[in-house]
Length: 270
Ligand SMILES: [Zn+2]
Image (cartoon, rainbow, N blue to C red; front, side, top):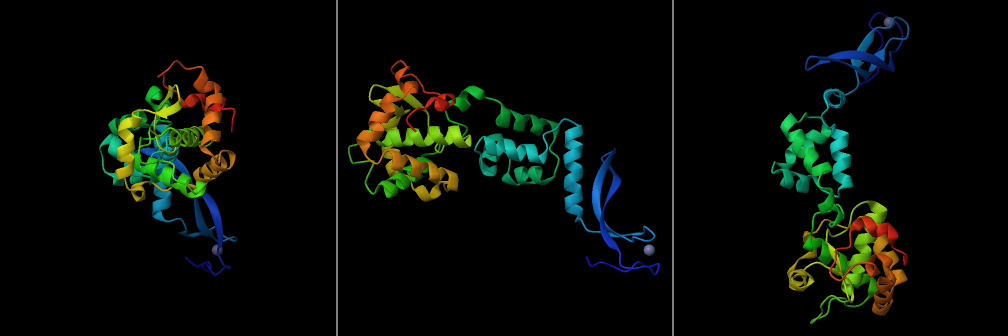
């Protein structure tokens, strides 16, 4: 919208933020609106915010006041847990369009708000063994392929039981959890005599081979940095093997015990 001349014959109207009280779902909600105002007589011209932006702001205030998760909160909690909109939708068993709309201003029902809270804030235990990310074999394959590329060698060999690959995965997942708040693959790890190992690794090896990494959510810049850091610190299998065996969070576990992600801050070798 272009600046207009005041229809009362004054000068050009100027863009100002004005406070308005808008009636929304039976609630009077104050909101700031950008509008053209005549500096001389105060006449208000057209507003500049799109109706959508105003609706979005009103919906945020309404949700805050009625104890529902706001769009901002849904989005930030979802990201904290490392979930995509699609993954969150799948968990709640609703369409992804609903998540998109709730994050941008549509108001969710009380019962769906409850479901959202359950998936975004609850279930702490499970979380600690997947590092805030749903388990994804495609992601494991992608992390593997990225390590192999950066190391310039094959990590998962033909008759491999992931003796070394598991250590690279472990450091990648643990560091991502420690530094970014979510693991890369969602894998759980156990303390085995030969070091940290992925749960069910025997069954996983074949699955990993068969999986297409292009199906995975791409690695973020920060995740790639972590992989690069690990490759730089441990270019050889024996180095990462030895480092993992010096980690207290592996040493202090009984054989077969899970290594929770919350202990990632105790890593000492990187
Ligand atoms: Zn005027």
